Image 1 (cartoon, rainbow, N blue to C red):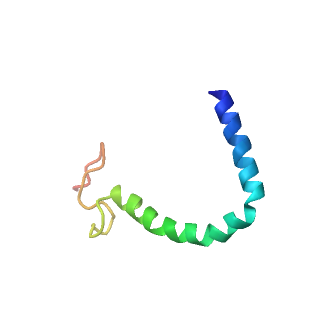
Image 2 (cartoon, rainbow, N blue to C red; image 1 turned 45 degrees about the vertical axis):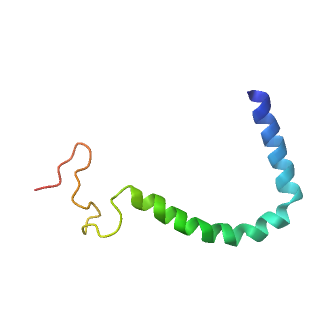
Image 3 (cartoon, helix red, strand yellow; image 1 turned 135 degrees about the vertical axis):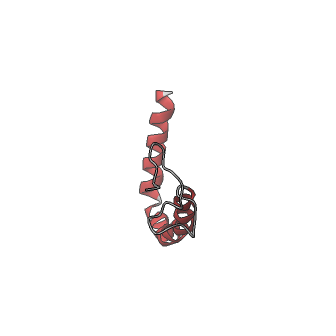
Length: 68
């Protein structure tokens, strides 16, 4: 298993050093693609849009009851 990890690190090093211009050219597109992905994954945790003002959506958090 360690040999595969070492091979992967060496391969990644050579890919990055040899293709740096291509990688930096696609960086703005990667940032634009990250926006919707982060939006989807972050809204999964708190019930999505339309929650209450405290971001809780009325659901109880594990071990806490927010009804006072």
